[in-house]
Amino acid sequence: MKRILSILAFLTLFVQNIFAQNNEIEMADHLRAEGKIYVVVICIVIILLGLLAYLFSLDKKVKMLEKNSGPKN
Amino acid sequence: MNKIWWKILAAVLVIYSTIAGLLLGVPRLAILNETIRNLYFHVPMWFAMIVLFSISVFYSIKNLNSQNETDDLKAVESANVGIIFGLLGLVTGAVWAKFTWGQFWSFDPKQNFAAISILLYCAYLILRNAIEEEQKRAKISAIYNIFAFPMMVVLLFVLPRLQDSLHPGNGGNPGFNSYDLDSRMRMVFYPACLGWILIGYWIYTIKFRIRNLQNQAQQF
Image (cartoon, rainbow over all chains, first blue to last red; front, side, top):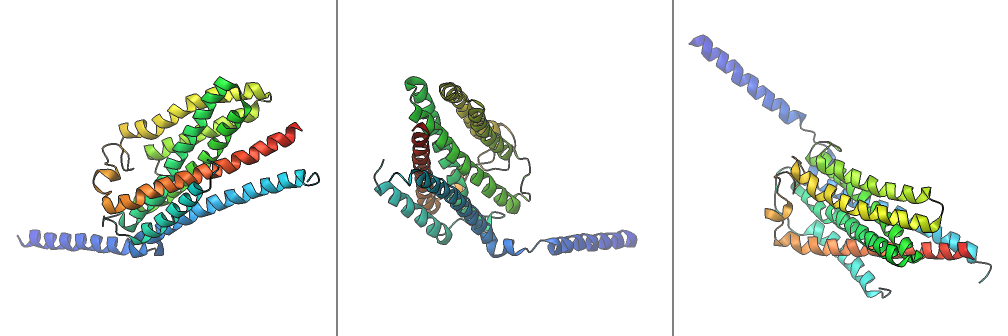
């Protein structure tokens, strides 16, 4: 009986230890802080960067067109 | 559609959805936490892409009827802009997945099929570049586009639902609208979708106008 109890005690300690470790392993990245709101910020920035880069490429095309049609006007 | 009012509407809707999307209340859910707000930014990208691809297939069919070159140009440019929105949806989805599913790319059916459907449209552009003669190019690419569109719909909305997927709305995984998308979120989500669709359409009209000018410059 004593042995079983000691084994049980050991096991509970062991299990607790695992959970404790899990809590420590939890990556407390800054990105996961504040309820992961920075993930939303990253996504908005990605969309804005993508569309802005696209706008710059469009701008370049318009500039080329203006250059080609420049002397006539 | 040359009026300015819908462009202003698009700007207002997008600004509203960004501000209200970050400030208004959302349901408190485990794992998702605040990232549920990504619904207002990630999902409208896909809606904009689908609308642009629909415009593309519409003009492809029109082009087969009319043999008009402007229809062909409209089809290409809307597909072009649609791919940009699809890529943005894919990248934002990957970032969102990293912090909720654990990995940027977990080879989830939804992710895989979304990537394949974008590749389908990349193939459309490559096919166009491969054909020199204009009439032939317009016809072949229009037919390809008519086949690519239903493939895209099946890849995005049918196949992921037949498998287990982490993405909401698939494989017995309820979509947001079943219980999470409460009235507070609808008030932001629908304007966000409309706003981003209009922005996509706007970029497409600019792209088409540039292409039209380039085309005219080449002919003279």
